[in-house]
Length: 263
Image (cartoon, rainbow, N blue to C red; front, side):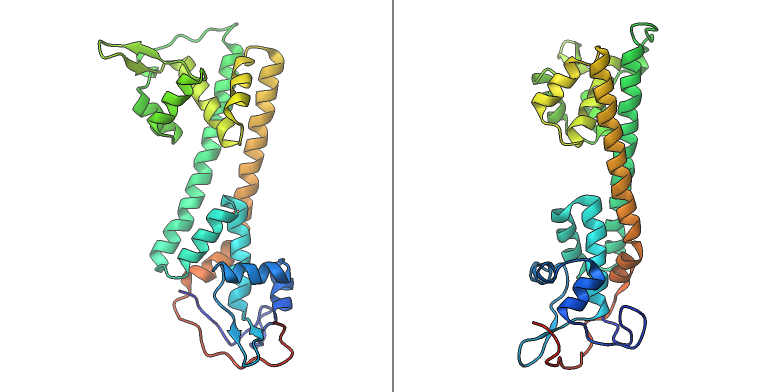
C-alpha cells in the first residue's frame, strides 16, 4: 500500500500540493508521461478538486522515480507490472520482489561471464585441447537449470543446429559434454542480448574464425556493460523503492486543490 506523507514536499519542507508540472520536473518525466503513468496504475490517482485539477504529493514523485529505476533494470512493461502490484503488496512480498530483480541481474552477469570463459576455451582448443572428464558432462535437465532455460529450449537449439549434444544409453538420452556446454552458454548469452536465431547461428558457425570470435567477444562485452547499467539504475532507485515498499498507510486527506494546479 502507498504511504502519503503530508508533512513534507519533495525538498523536505512542509507539505505543499504539487501540480502535474511540478511532479514532471521532479521525476524527470514529461507532463503527458505523468498523466499516462497515473492512468496505467504506476502511481496512485491524484486528488482532484471540484473543478478537476490534479493535486499530487511527494509520494507520487517517489513512485515515478522508483518506476524509472525499475524500468532501467527490467524494462518498462515489467516495471509497470511490478509497481502496480507493489501498491497492494505486503512489505515482505514487495521486498522479496525487488530482491528477486537483484538476483536475476546477478545471475545474468554470472552467465555472461561464463559465456566469455567458454568463448576463450573454444578459441584455445586448437592449441591446448582440454581433456574431458565424465563428471564434466550434464544431462539436459542439469544444463537447462544451469542456464535458466527450459529443457524444451535446449531441444529447440539442437534442432536449429546451435548446440549438439551426444546421444547415450538405450533410451538415446542427451549428454552434454564440455563443447556442447560451452556452446550452450554462448547461445544463451547471445539470445539474452536480443540476437535472433539466424544471427546466433551465423555467430556460432564463425566461432573458430578469428573475426567471428572477436565479434562474439564484443557482443558479450556489450551485454556485460548493459547488465551493469541496469544494476546501477536499480541501485539509484533504491531509496525511492524503499519508500514505496515501506509505505503502510493509505492516502491521507489532502488539502483541496486550487486553481493554480494544472489539470
